[in-house]
Length: 464
Image (cartoon, rainbow, N blue to C red; front, side, top):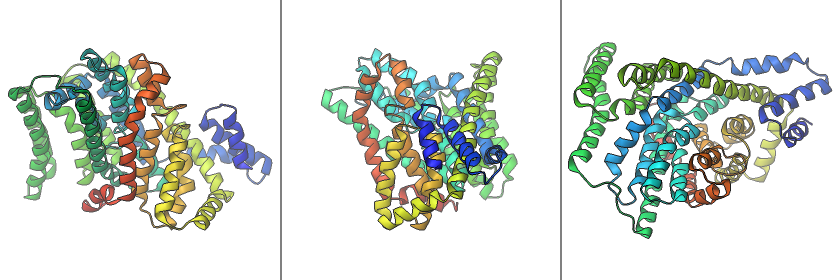
């Protein structure tokens, strides 16, 4: 009966969060087994979670980076590094998204932030609008795969797994996806006879390589200094002073913005802070860069960013709260157990279950935004995952990737609508432009689904 109420409310077109909470309330009132205030109690309890505090701070960090002119620095850095390759701006698009993914944590922020700059630049250089939109849409899916990731935080809370392990699990898959996308750009460049978009200049390329080397060497130097007996806190403070002095002296393009994911992942893996504290640290870092170092963010804009963050956070949290009571009701009424028994009666082969789960999640992703889909699907699928011996961290990565692909599809794909507005294309033309880019994404999905070692190697190596 609960399922009927939920599907009935969904069919009326009301938001999915209201449908989940409403179906639960109607069922409780009709059954008479529980008092009505159970809905409110379970909803409040569902968001009374320390790990969920990371959600508003990751959203705020992404918004601050988006509004502080950081995207222009990332674009110029990526242009210097790969803009001279054939199909240059296509490669810049992918590399820029890889870097920005380490700051925003959402595909929509990536598409709206870097996408605006990249699509305009590609059109100015003579690329077809459809190609620019397609590569931007595909690369935007990297946002929630490469840490930090808002969907990973939601999944971790729902599945009771480590946020840090999920963040580490997304690094190598993100690199794999980026490589496949860049190979796709190279294919189109070869097919259409495209050249580079800027001349290869050693000084410019060398400067980008030096910045890359600094980003890699700085955390390694701190790590080994601590390993050799230096006090951790004093070493980190000294390292920060040195990197800011180097940026002031050499006028680096993007070293400090790229340091955001380095600081976040490094702090979590070394135990310096929890994921929630890491999200706060990312916000402080973004504020320091935007308000004081680059001075590209005014206090008036900061207030606006905070208000936008409150609005987005309220939406996400309401979905999580509604899913909490709905998931609890699904378990209490035996729905999840019945579905698990049905699936296990049909097959006990993990590979076949993963195939069916992928099809289901791709379908659901076309109609629900990721947060809502995760909160609905995890209580249903996780018991089956655990019974079949599938690693829940690996399954979380597969689920998020499926739902990111769903963001590119009508009728509910938010990235699709964002890019249609940015590129001033119809939704139909935008959809057609994205279709060829589903190939590298689906290849990535198959590889990551059936080779779990790619996603699990880093968490195991770091002991998480």
